[in-house]
Length: 301
Image 1 (cartoon, rainbow, N blue to C red):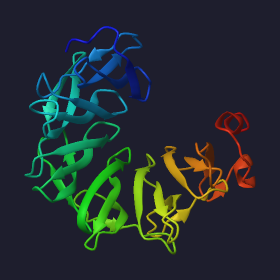
Image 2 (tube, rainbow, N blue to C red):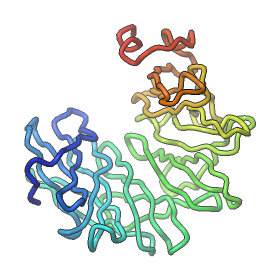
Image 3 (cartoon, rainbow, N blue to C red):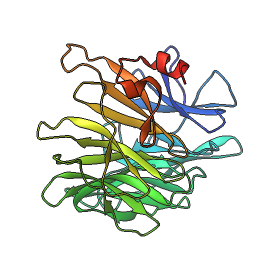
Image 4 (cartoon, one colour):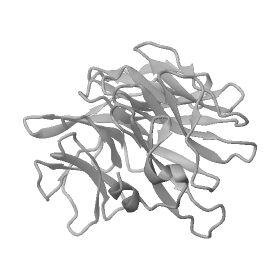
């Protein structure tokens, strides 16, 4: 795929050793194009789309950098997209259409460390979208099921045995869910006391800690939360004195999680701080609920 000279690029993720970086650009026609940088080079290589004139986006990469997953429209930039993977053989990436569950669209959100398990979501028909998984670089999507409504998978453990995401109940409320093992049914991870919804964003590499968010009260403020060792009740990770927070990442063994937290309840431009939490105990200045900027906190660890 030829790249437009002078267009801005963005880097969105990297392999475990940092030698493969993926990202994207937007060409002169407004079409999104995925990119990859190999072996610490400064010049990106374009990744193919399912159709030369179609949008494609890369979302995640395996630990060894040989598998990148995302989505690509198949017939023009604005048409329905399919989950895809780009696999590298002899230094070059080729694209594979991962298909759907029978409907029009699908998307891949995350991939296991060795690239053998991919998760995301796929349409069954015009109104039903379910969490889906693809195993062993197979273009056959596996329906992961729901709690009664639509569902989606957003993250998985290093070996792919723990998958996390969200599902609507039959009545419409949103719940964080987890799938423990291949062919498992989704487990409802519950809500905070007084809340009505939750979602799981990702899980630690060892599968022991799930992080995400949950509404805190009838005001629908969302707090960062964590689930430990297959618990079905979330632990509230709190805020920095404001109303909202959001957990965004977790270490490989679940010992540390990162969260964006609103420090003040009312500001025209909300200011966020970065907090580090150690399982059930909070580290450093965050425990004192002080307004710490990310750099100050990290330097103090």
